[in-house]
Length: 445
Image (cartoon, rainbow, N blue to C red; front, side, top):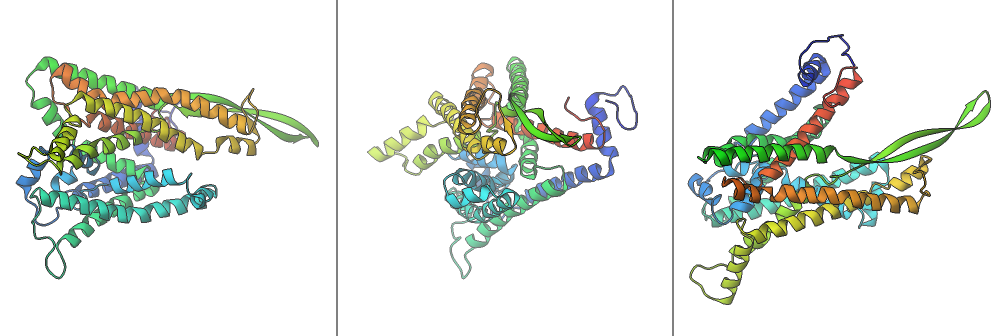
């Protein structure tokens, strides 16, 4: 397909599509608006809370809480490493969204709301935003207590008429709500999927640190070349599994009137069941769960104490240390289980068989109603195994990359890579749909 301007330039396809996107005034405005809000986000990520000991904060990231803080820092785009007002990123909102998704099929009132179309979705989204506030306050309090114990914040945060801990927690929670608002503005007036774009921008902003830690700090060229090859292979597999889908054929029977005579006409379509329909959510679940045992156990480890509690806590902390094989084995199992569970939960909320029946559609050879629902569930479970195993592989690849290349890769780099590639593909789809509406070529063939 030629572009509307008839330009048959020999420029590369993606580059031509990018030029076409900037030729459209309203699309150019959306892109620049998105970039502008991402710049605002990066400014907010560097506004620190008062009274931070920078040296103690830097040492904390290499100590016993380094794994937990690294996980949280990934979603804040390095803001936690600076202990800014945006230190929690949009993670409380993600937590609230996950909780709501799990509660919808359980609570009858929420399940009824989910069936009320656009109004129901707006109400559930409103409840999600309300739930974000107490989650952000609780997480902010936990982070402040953790950092105070590590000597990063002053020890006298509870004194005075207005304890200093209150404005710190409120400012961190307000930073999270502000980032969620920025994400919604990007969704409504920018390219779309604003929350994902915020996470994407944070991860990309941390790429220089990843390169410095994993590449520039290593002197073995063979290991670096092998690590680059593994990274390219992971990116290729992420694209393949993100785009892979099983197409279930669907036929629609409808009545048309021609010359005053009713005739039956048939139409065909398909239901796309994605191999990896759970996205990055299982990885977030798994990392959050597997970090907790070592973090909680570290509170009960007393140096020099040979008591049962201290030795047991030390054993738990050692078993869930990122350098142990047991840690990565449990992580792989958790990712696979969470992927299958989350896929089934989200699929049950779609009511595909019921919607098909209302629209007069059916799967050839399958009776409408409950048989269709069971068939779709069986098919989705079979294809989801591939996506679940792939996500498990993505989660544990840093461990094997470190063994084979002797380069200290970040434990969360593959997860970050999955998020970055997924958001980039979605961004290209958004631009493609906008271009095709104006008869320009898109990004993805």
